[in-house]
Image (cartoon, rainbow, N blue to C red; front, side):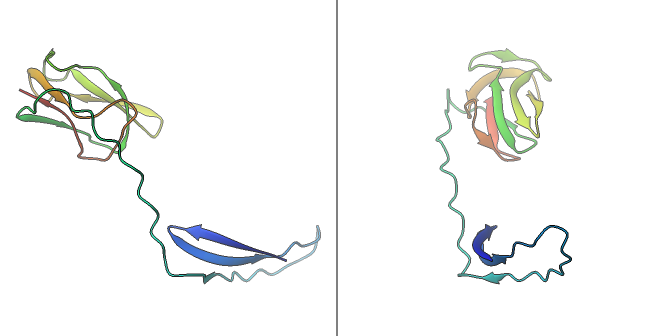
Length: 126
């Protein structure tokens, strides 16, 4: 028998694994006892967003959690409603985030490769 400690969602469990000969019939009864008090996993260090330009009045936000795949627009660029500003990658799909209205990009609040959550501010428009 071998003893292992397995951590699931920040809770450590002590488990015992028994090696059984091939073809032998076994009845497994799962036994898992917490080893220690739950320990919160450390939060990943968030990189400071690369804010370029001053904030505008129209916010462009992420609709899904994911990673910033590409910055399409740049500060000072004129965009029309529906033009792609940022492309997010989520679940192996590239998702364009578009300008909600005509305007000029006032700030880009993320950098390529940054992790974002749903609702995070990506850019602003004037």
